[in-house]
Image 1 (tube, rainbow, N blue to C red):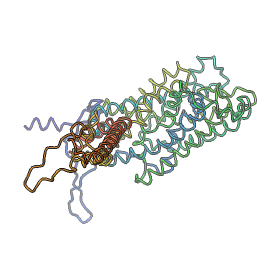
Image 2: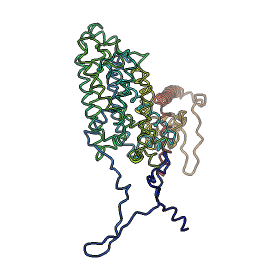
Image 3: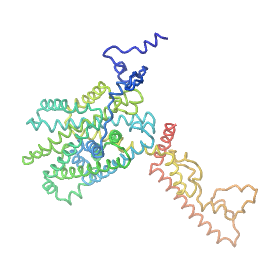
Image 4: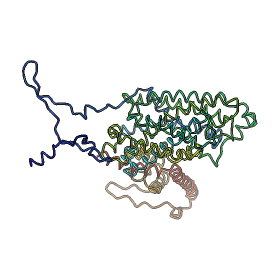
Length: 565
């Protein structure tokens, strides 16, 4: 026993700490050695034992935080990114009016979903988007949203590098057909600037660079709006009325435009990371962050999209700056490219953080990694270097080979952005409040069915088939069944109810023929109304996709109850 105890307390070899001995993808093993104590003599001559602070605790860095403005700047940088120069391309692919409605609608939905996600996370007491999906839909939901978060952020990293390849080399006089020199400039500049910035431990450390990138984005949009030949483009297209009446929407490519817009506004993948970097993260302060950031991004996107599309229309490129080839706009285009390139240097680390976060939650083991506590997991420098360099390399290599920014924006937005921006927030909220939703559906459907739902329980609306118990006889039929029948006396069983059909009506006396024919006419009208009512209820049930929503609420509600237990 003594030998084993001495072996357990034996210090590690020189130059090796306990963190070095722990596996790379697993949490560090807790040391069983007790905290060091030291006996000291006070000025009065008495002896006192004090506990010395452990080196690990002493060297631990507190997590950096930022205020409302700094957090708003980070959120704007995540949202705007590379998508701002793709807004005119989105209008070209979806159509002018459809694209404008799409821009405004996506901005409003994004702001709502950001607040909804964080509120739902607070409600279930989970620290990240992926653990929120896990609480609602198990490990499958955890993996589903993590993979889509990686797809979206990886597409962002790749698109930022493509923009750097398009904007920085022309500033040095490099032609577009000089592919080796463009690739060399991208590799060297990203290695010297992007990689060190991406090595930061916390997102709040980039608040100042995010403020610079927001300023650059505003200047770029102003340059596009001011120097774009909007008047010439509108006149060449036949005037405003021709554009409004003939260029409304493009059904064959509208989903490409939706993918670009979704990618431009998607930021749900980093919502919990950004909210966690906010000082005193109350609901009101987070609402201020989302409102300010989405209002700014919406105005910038509409201004850039309108001016760029109206100027070039069917010739609009995936990167609107590539359309500025006229000699009189070369100066403004060069300034915009320089500012946009600087912005991409500062925006890339934000998406890289999300990719790094997904790698941690999927590959690393332990509760800290699973819950997405990047600050603690990345305390080891080797882990931070490995994950950052891995993301950098897998984004850099394709960016050197791909030139079409619109394709990257469309694919990343249509696949990953749609899932994390539109599907995830809604289904998690529905699952977290599943019981309340099913009760509300039962109450509403009971009132619509004329009380025919009666006490069937919340298990009925979750069925994929329309609940047949709703299709009961209406009140007018029930009233006719009981009309003229003696009511059962106290203690007697009620008479067996007989389905109402015209063939079951008994013959009437001759002096009652008039009243009988009137009764038959009333019964027919009531039956037709009842059938129409039943058909309308069934059609409404499926048109509103109620089986799908009720199934999500039921499955998610059960998962949430298991998670809370």
